[in-house]
Image 1 (cartoon, rainbow, N blue to C red):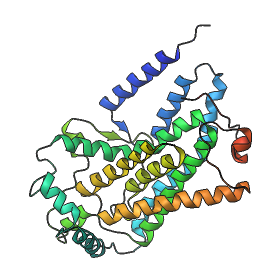
Image 2 (cartoon, helix red, strand yellow):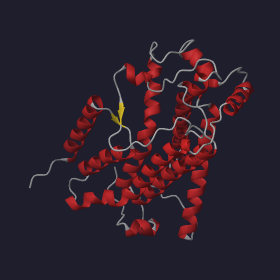
Image 3 (tube, helix red, strand yellow):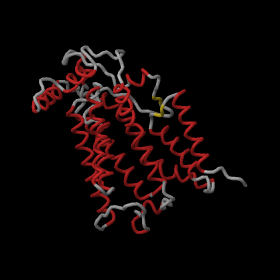
Image 4 (cartoon, rainbow, N blue to C red):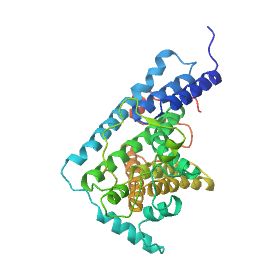
Length: 328
């Protein structure tokens, strides 16, 4: 039987994904993105028996269910009857801006400097508007793509990462429940701020790129802003990578959450204080999950550098048939 070479399979996958993204839209929901990741794992492991490709669903389905529940619950939190906070984040951002000599919230000053006054959703699009849209959209892809790579390479590390990814989502959900908050664009709409446009997708719209939900993207919630999960996951990516990698260069990964926070503030989606709180829940997630893992194993927790020995793999991974597969 003639097998398709891995490079051919992967190249075909890339072409198919690019065509899909151009004609339909970039996958935007966890389940839809995970289906594309599953297709990639099939292309990467064509030499494995067909039955082995079902291991993906065996391992992933509880976590994807948890993410679907989170997406549903997030949309329901604005029906709990709590009034959205409007002035508190404005006052906090004004104080933070004053620390470095600013006189207004960073969102307003950035839009005036980079977009013009007033900033219009359909105004002139510059190269950095496209970059802002790309950074903003990366939130929906980065965490799950990292999970896919780790699942192929090292199931123990995959379990660590997906646990942190889901945990931070639920920490953010607590914030949405106890502190519903109007984002800058909404506060400006209601007259609490000078004109602020919501322009996170303006760059993509200008070049004809869209994001699309394939299966289930959750329910919308315009007051789910504190803390910023976009910033939180970006900080989580950087914190986790810095904890795992070696060499001073790894600290350059902090540029990703800095870029994400800048994109969120400039685009009118979040205040500066939201992104700071996103960094806080990322830190809490790292500390809390590490504590739980140490407690579960009953020994001091040591980072797994690249490949997992049998005694490094948690019992729940072993029961799921987890193993250290071929690296990518």
